[in-house]
Length: 141
Image (spheres, rainbow, N blue to C red):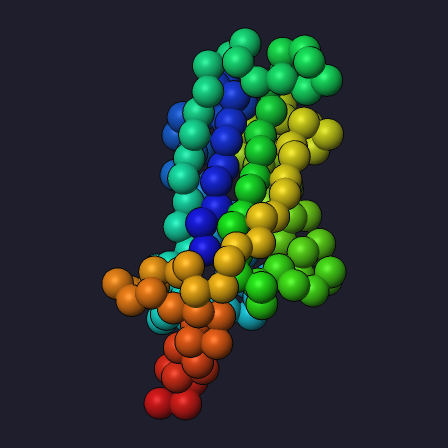
């Protein structure tokens, strides 16, 4: 499940980037009750994009901000409570990692649903039903 985290340069200190990605990944897994899951954990990936100041905008004006975008199958982020839990946690994580300089109002997020069957997990193309089965398999073993 790719997460794209886009930041304006300077939104977070460089030393906070990797720990912030790790915390957001943990929040995504936790929101779904999958923290530490052996199949899902290594398949929640993040693309971190840091753009130069002056190249990110809000309302057509330059802004220092953060953008969180998820790409998920139909069963992920499907419930409003899960959506709220994850995006609220991710916003707090970014705010805290910025030492309070990045206000929550400058942290935007969205989720993009994907086409069933387009997931390559552990080197195998899988559909939603196959992913759900893989998630249940370790628990049954």
